[in-house]
Structures are given as C-alpha cells and as structure tokens.
Image 1 (cartoon, one colour):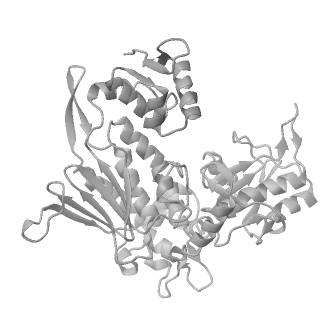
Image 2 (tube, rainbow, N blue to C red; image 1 turned 180 degrees about the vertical axis):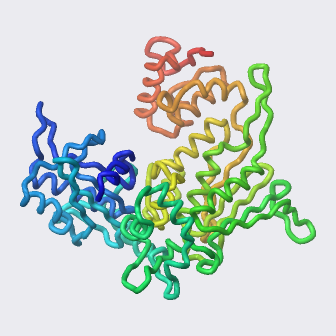
Length: 481
C-alpha cells in the first residue's frame, strides 16, 4: 500500500464504505493508547457491521478528523489487532489486511466484502453499517437479515463462458480513474470491489461485473436496462385507443445506463411558468433529486434475478412512475419507507458499492426521506410507494398541495427548524386563520399529546408560533416575510 493510496482514502469522508479508527483514548486530558482488547473489539465491531452490510475499508491509526496518529502498540498487540476478526467474531471473518507505514507511523488497512453470513461479536451482538454509523441490530432484524442474505446470490454468480475480455476496458479504466485513481484496474476490481475470481487461467467476472462493465450487456441479461414510455393523458389506453406518445429503451452497462436514461428522460420533464413576486419564473414540474433518486434506486436495488422484466418509467400528464422488478429486500418494509425511516439494505451490495463510488449514491438510507422532503418543499404531494405483484413502484405527482403564497411562506424555514409534521400543520394553519390548537396538531401530525406539546414548544422557542394567551393550548403563527 503506497502513501499515495492512503492519501486518496484520507480525501474521502467516513461513510457506508469507509471508517477511520483511532488507536488512542482521549477521555483524559492527554491521549493514551487504547487497551489492545478495547481496540480489537472496536475493529471487529466495525468490520462485522460492514460485512453484514455492503463491505468496505477500515483504516486504523487515523482520527475521525482524518489526522494520522498511527498505532503505538507493540508487535504482539499489533498481531492481536490483525487477528481480531478471526478471534472475536462468529463465524470467523477473514478480511484482507495490510500493514502500512507513513514516515514513522504504523497503520492497518482492512478491506472486507459483503458477507453471506451474519457476523456477531462472540457471545454478543450483531452490528450493521448504515451511512457513517455502526448500529446494533435487534433480534427481529437479525432474523430478517438472515433471510434476506439467502437471496443475494445473483450478482455473485459466475458465468462459465465469461472472461475478463468480455468487459469493456475503457469503462473499467474510467471507473477506476474516478473511484480508485492510480490503481491497477484488475487489482481494484478484484480486491476492492470483489468483482473478479482469479481461480482460473483468466480472471472470471461475476454477474455484477458483467452488469456494470460488459461490452454487450444483453448477452448476459436480456432486460437489465430501462424502458421509458410517455403517455398522453392520465391513464394507459390500449388497442385502437393506444395513447403512447414516446417510447425509448436504454440498454447499457450500469455505469453508463443511469446517465443515458437521466439525460433523455430529463428532456420530457416540463417547466412551468409561475408568477412569483410580480415576476414570471420557470420551475420543473418535479424536483430533479426526487425522480432521479427513484431511478438510481431502481437500478441499484432491483432484483436482477427476475431477468424477464426491465425497469420501467411511465410518464403521464399528472405523474411519473418508476417501476422496479422485485419487492423491497427484507428487513426493509414498505411501511418503513412510507414512514421515511433511515434504513438501508442492499440486495446487490457489489453493484451498490460501485455505483456509490461513481457518485450516484451518496447518503445510504437517506435517499427516500430526502425524496419526501424535496416533494414537500416543492409544495407537491408526497411520493406514493406501492407494490403490484413483484413490481415496486414509486409515483411522483405534479399537482401542487399548497398555493404559491403558502409555499413561499413555508420555504423560509429550513429542515433544521421544522420537521415534515410541523411543516404540514403550519401550512394548514396558514390557510385557516393562522391559528391552531394542540388537538389539531395531534390530529394532523398523527402523534400523541406529549410529542405534539414538545414540537409546539420548539416552534415557540424558534419564534415561529406563540400562544394566543398565557397557558393557552391554542397558538397563532408569528407573521414573517
């Protein structure tokens, strides 16, 4: 491991696929080296969480602020740190590990792939990686995750007659230049992304590698692309009343597919002229992030084992729907998504990691909640999430919920000041006399009295609302703008 490669890692932020672990304890005034037992458990905990999720890299000897402080432990302790995934996890985990020297400082760099088992600290808990957090899994989620792991084999399969030469070298080089600059392409795909098998004379690509980089994607999967259909009106018509205006099919390796589809679909997202502050301005009928996130999620999380169906984008006058083959992978549920829970599980962890390093997926588990926020800030109805057979659909409607004056008033508040429940209640109150009661808050926000009281008090503290009179349970909006 060269110093340049460590430098590239240090330019990245902690996240789904990268964690920095300090070898020092700063609970006292001066930092002292962590006990070997404590540091070993920390390493094992983070590595097991990544193996239970999408895999990733762990750099030991680096502070959370990315300053390099090294590992001060002696030779025997260092050996124990390297062996911690085998000694402390059940089943044993065997990540790749490299010793690195930067000047007189020692570091350890672990690389772990997404596993098919659920790893746990010996005699203890199981952990899972979500964005930059390592969270403990409750028992019911462990069971659901075990079941889900049984269905993630497709992208790991190897086609007998597929070799390295079936991949597009220019696509691979472009990917490596962006995600792992300076690294040998075969080495990056083999050891960082776990996409190649070297047990044969020629490196053998997994199905994930073929989906991402194949010269001829349809040779390996007949329907891995995206079908776009634009309809006239608000319903699909058939036969003599067929109302298809435009039909396009996008078939390309996944590292190119998203950009190609987004570029062409964007041409059909209309702009609307809105009167604002005595000036006319243009606004797209859907927030760009919302519909693109739905498309990226479909490519990343669809069930590629359902090879007879493609991702479909249906566009009508009043809505756009992104239809993805496959149900949400357990432990993710439709109800959790509708409640905007920050959850994450990848049916295709190898594909997800590659797409994330390409910049298509940034905050794991936060995409769907942000879709809701973007639609809300546009004054549109929240996304509709539904299941029909084996198809998961995200529908965005372009009909506004609020008038322009209400939306303008609401958008002066940031998401740090008000949450979505507070936002909806304020919009209702703004249009109905600019007053509301605690009971109305409970009803519209669908929360209990304690939660309603707590969130109203926060709005009072921020100067957004005020009691109608002392100790009143009714409130008025404080005029702004």
